[in-house]
Amino acid sequence: MESTDPSLDHLGFEEVVRLLDAEGIRRAHAVPLFRWLQTGRRLNFEAPLERWLAARPGVCTEATRVSETPSADGETRKFLLRLADGQEVESVLMGFKGRHTACLSTQVGCAMGCVFCATGQMGFRRHLKVGEIIAQARFLETWLRENHDDRLRNIVMMGMGEPLHNFEATMQALELLTDTRGLGIGAPRVTISTVGHVPGIRKLARHPKRYSLAVSLHGATDEEREPLVPINRRWPLVELMDACREFSEIRNQRVFIAWTLIAGVNDDVAQARRLAELLKGMDVHVNLIPLNPTDGYAPQAPGAGEVLAFQRVLQDAGLPSTIRQRKGIDVGAGCGQLATRSGAL
Ligand code: SAH
Ligand code: SF4
Image 1 (cartoon, rainbow, N blue to C red):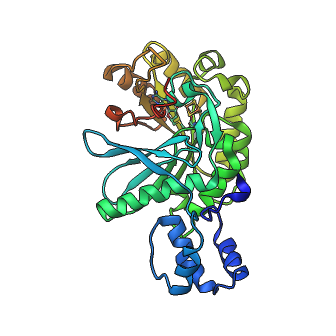
Image 2: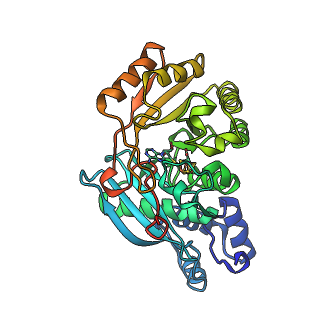
Image 3: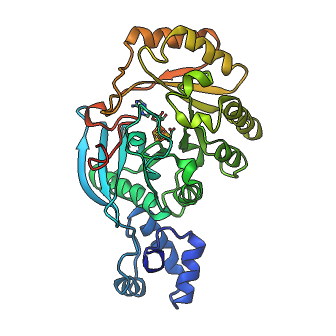
C-alpha cells in the first residue's frame, strides 16, 4: 500500500524541493506547494505547478468528513473523518477566536487500555501515518479559515491514541506542523499528552524542539493506578516519575499532570495528599478533569465540592492546578470520549 500511496503531505520542505528538482519543476514552486499540502491554502500557484499537480491525483492524504457535531455552547466541534482504508478518527476543534486549538488523533483506537476511556475501550486498530495526522490539522485549519477567517494556534495530541506509542510518525508530523512554511505552530503551543510511555518521555527530553508535555497520572500509587491504567504494570510510577524529573531537568521545562477525577475511585483528599507527596519538589502543573461519561465504564464524575476539596489539598501543598472546563461533553468530544461509532461497540 505504501508504495502506491501518491500522497506528498508527509514530506518535509527539503524533500518537496528535491522531488520538484527531480521532476524538472523549478524549486520556487516548493513554497506554495508545501504551504498548500500543510494548510490547504492555495496561494501563488503558477501554471507549471498547476499542470504538474493536475497529473498527480491524491497528493493530499484522504480524511473525509463523515459527520460534524458542534457542542451546545458552540465552542467545541467534533469531526469524524474517514481515512483511505475506511477506518475513522475523530478530530476536535476547541476554543475562541484567536486561540483555536486542534485536538488530533495519533492512532485508530489505543493499546493502553485505560478503563475509563472510550478509545481504550475500542482496543488498538492501527497507528496513523504522518500524512493522516497532517490531514486532520489541514482539515481543521481549512474549516477555521472558511468559517471563521481564523487559523490554528495550538495543537494538543490528545485525541484518539497514545502519541508516544506511535513515536516516529507523531514526531515527524509535529516537525511539519511547526514548520513556519506550513502551519507554523510554535513548539511550546504543541502539547503531547502521554499515559506515561517512559521510553518516549526520555526520548522527548532530548528532542531539540520545546514541545509541552502532559502526563496522565490518575493514581498516586501503583495499587491505585494500575486498575485504571493497566500499562502502569509495564512502566510503574517510580520509573514514570523519574522520566518526568529527567524531562524537567534536562529542558528546564514544566510538566503538566492530568488527573481524571472519578467519584469514589480517585477523588478523595487522602489520594490528593499522596499525589502532592509524589509530586513534591517537581516543576509541575496539575490539570484536574472530572470524568466524562463513556459507555464502557459505570463510575461517575465527583460533585463540585469534592473537586474543590481535592484541589485545595494540592494548593496547600504549593502545587499549581486547574480544573479543566468540561468542554464538548454534550457531543461526546470531551477528553476520553472519542470513539468512532463503529468502534464504540
Ligand atoms: N493517550 C494520551 C492522550 C489521549 S487521552 C493520554 O492518555 O494522555 C487525553 C486525556 O484524556 C488523557 O489525560 C486521559 O487520561 C483523559 N481521559 C481519557 N478518558 C477520559 C474520560 N472518560 N474522562 C475524562 N478524561 C479522560
Ligand atoms: Fe489510550 Fe490515552 Fe485513552 Fe489511555 S487515556 S486508553 S492512553 S487514549
